[in-house]
Length: 321
Image (tube, rainbow, N blue to C red; front, side, top):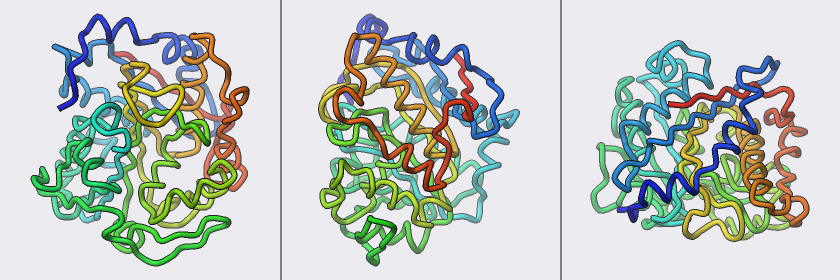
């Protein structure tokens, strides 16, 4: 279990500014591009732990705002169907300290099963057993009847896309009909930020080999393969805890208390990048560009036609519970 955090510490570390002040003026902004939803709740931490019920409400509200649906049921029904195989990619790289919360994974699995998706048609994967366990899916006691797999034990063919070349998780290539991406809000010491697009470095055989030119060409190439580009239905990002400087692992440095959701990975990552920049500015820290790690891959992905990064074309929809 994740170590408890007292409520006073949580609230003291939370920054309303980054989620509500920086974005509040653009809530429900008219735009010709995709929706990105940011839902905040300062009560999501109770008795030192995440409140699973509130967290589930936050996820549902974010998915509603991202899809424009009038109810949570309609929102999930608009994205997934009972006869599909759904792949779930959380991010457990940071271990128990700062990985996709088990409560987020559990809620999404329950939502899929509520649609009639069979448990063995849900595949959750990560690189290492400890990473799956950190996200609430231990291999020795896999919950909910889903299939939990390790990337390196299930690699498929080598895929070449632009400057990316590597073997890719076989079920992603050959089995799943839809992908549910569950990253966490984090910085990265090489490419600046790691969100939805870079989360799929955990879906390939040799991620370390893809760090040339600060990862940017490889992230864009990988994001452009059809198994990811055409099958990603939803991104739900755990922003209850975040990393804003240094490595992509370790104890959380910021507690935004939010959930972010989108169907466009580029718009999603662009928004997450702006959230991190806003918090860094609030603390008097340099921009990612000034630090030499601007996440250039986000604009490169837009230029490649993979989504929208332009802030003026993204409809940011915020809410508080």
